Image 1 (cartoon, rainbow, N blue to C red):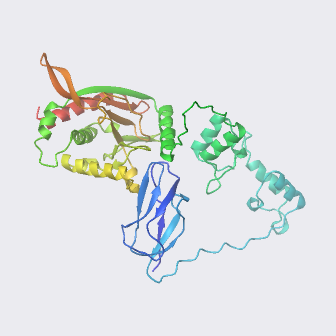
Image 2 (image 1 turned 90 degrees about the vertical axis):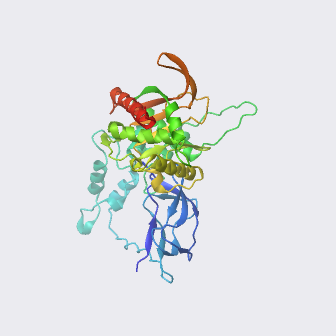
Amino acid sequence: MMATEIVMPNLGFDAQQGRLIEWLKQPGDSVQKGEIIAVVESDKANVELESVASGVVLELLSAAGEEVSVGAVIARIGQPGETPAKAASPPPAVTVEVSPVARRLAAENQIDLGAVKGSGRGGRIMREDVEALMKAKVPKNGQKSGVLALPKVRKAAREAGIDLAQVTATGVHGEVTLADIENHLRVVEPEPEVVMGEGAREVPLSRLRQVIGERLSQSMQEAPHFYVSGAFDLEAALTRLRQFPDPQPRINDLLQYLTVQVLLRVPQLNATFERGHLYVHGSVNLAVAVAREDGLITPVIPRAERYSLQGLAAESRALIQRARENRLKPDDLQGGTFTISNLGVIQQVEQFTAVINPPQVAILAVGTVKQRAVVVDGGLHIRHTVHMTLSGDHRVVDGMHLGQFMAAFQAELDRFSGA
């Protein structure tokens, strides 16, 4: 029976690597399928990695603290006494004859002779073979290609006026990373010395905080945001909630539940916009913004439309608790189609606007629920109300869609309250 390979999981949108924080199992330890064997740090949070098989740990292929590419094998699980499979030996190097002129030309232009196909007798690499490869690497715009880099890295290099060929690549597969661009800028343009006043201290940004800054900056730059706000009377809904048996759903649970129902009626906002393509989703994968000391994360309740109010309340509370205790699983961070950000716990936050969580096309910002003076049937009354603001990506949704969401929310609220 062959050993089962444990790989670095996909840790969320656009994640390329994850850092192995801690192994909870060592070689020789028994493990059950579904048991937590490691803690991995993604761009968003620490997540727990489960074993996909039962047996014993045969070997660990990555050390704690190591950055590992998504999909790379990090451990093997097998049966007691089983010997780990040996990695295949690399094929023997093939010696190819190279002319002195071709060798010198390749060295001067940093050409890998292993990538050159020789046209001489017996496959001998000639000067014209090296020249042909050099021409293939220079497109019509005259800039060197052949540099491995993701589109977002190439965009960053263009905006900074950097030739990628001049950047030292540190990626796992020899690719230039965003960190390489930043390091290159520090070398070329050293940061000016910052003079701080008395009592000031530098606070290093966590990896999560840096990723939040990058992604939200990208969202504001690429997605033209526009906003629609509304105020909702919750007095009757609060009375109805008090009729539920313990544990009673809270007002935050109700707002999440009503949002799910509304998205089924206004599916244009339950969507993602990726690489120029708009995807409207049949299921509501509700992302819930959770504040932690190191930043905001948005774990996901998949297929939230499956739940009753009480069921969604229990699922949401369990998810938020796992997020705050750093016990999330990889699946908890993927596939969100709409996000709710609730700052209602802070009584002074009447209302606010939120930045869209890409690739989603909308986000709902919920302010505090408290008593306010409202006019009802021509009279002034004190009622519990909430202000909510919906942000939309104007590339793919219109103000009418946001307005329909607000109208549908009021209708669902009235239906729940028995109005």
